Image (cartoon, rainbow, N blue to C red; front, side, top):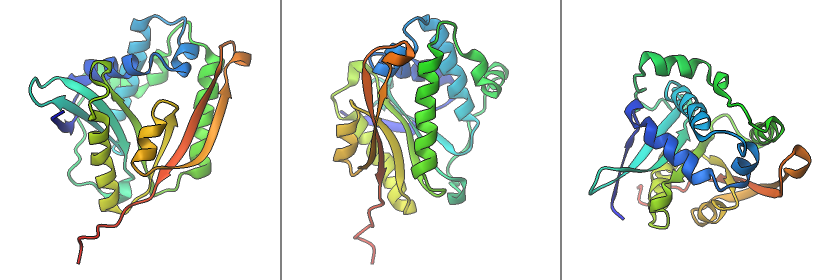
Length: 225
């Protein structure tokens, strides 16, 4: 499917939040952490976290749009260390309200959240990054496609943007994958460093979820003289 990839702006935020919540809602973490949370309250948290990333110079927020309609159909966050000095990247300007939300995103944690599940998941992310992430690694922090457009190769096209950037910078790229995303990342050159199984039942949830800590080494450009 033909798409265009561009940097996101604040005006794209409703689409970013929709894609985030709609694509991950069926996942075990969401089902356990946010089962008793109103959708509107969860979306408010997602707005705050999105705005916080807009103002972080390490974060590159990109969207894929349908080339025919212009509709935003996928969303990706890539973290690029500041040492690479990405001259083409300029931070989006936020409105006053968005700036306030960006300053204190945790203020918008919704009522009804399963705090034990939420903390366990965040601890897993934190410990895996402390264990495996190097200072000059890039991070594929988030990638999701609107459920209406899944299965059309859009995620693969966005991944190619990210891997090309990493190869150009000669940087490794780190990520944490769900069971659903794992096959795609494996296909595009990520190797598994560790599989982590989280048991949500003792935390007031249900079932166990597997998460994969993965790294991709840069691929040299064989066309260079």
